[in-house]
Image 1 (cartoon, rainbow, N blue to C red):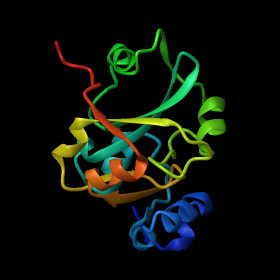
Image 2 (cartoon, rainbow, N blue to C red; image 1 turned 60 degrees about the vertical axis):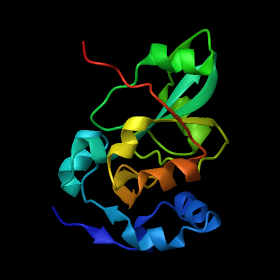
Image 3 (cartoon, rainbow, N blue to C red; image 1 turned 30 degrees about the vertical axis):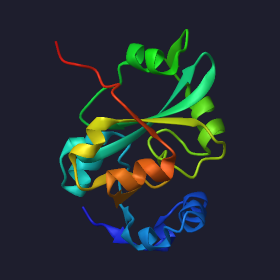
Image 4 (cartoon, helix red, strand yellow; image 1 turned 90 degrees about the vertical axis):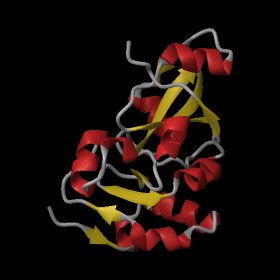
Length: 167
């Protein structure tokens, strides 16, 4: 699979967000793939990293209010733990139109920051298990690397434990 780099590979809204956050040096690190990497498994295979090094940016609705959950690619979000963490009555996965309306990006390309609206962000501690994680750069075709502490900080995330536990 061929990979290209460069600012033309970055979603314009996400490039603006990187610049606004003082992260313009990330733009040349963005990798664009000719085929979509909509799933964590596809992204990990394209990058050549562990599945758990992928940072999924998932939008949920907590009592109808969008919230961003950052989760490692090898794990699933435990919706009940998210509900408890947020003190919400009900938490569900957001529908595609809500994801686009909230973030400005399509599912499969949602980055951890640079969204159209400000949402609460929670990040699972499992992301800290790696020196570098890879996250979507605004399209299902592009990803960028960052150390997880910086990524979570720039996203305004709160560290929590919300991944499903295996029984």
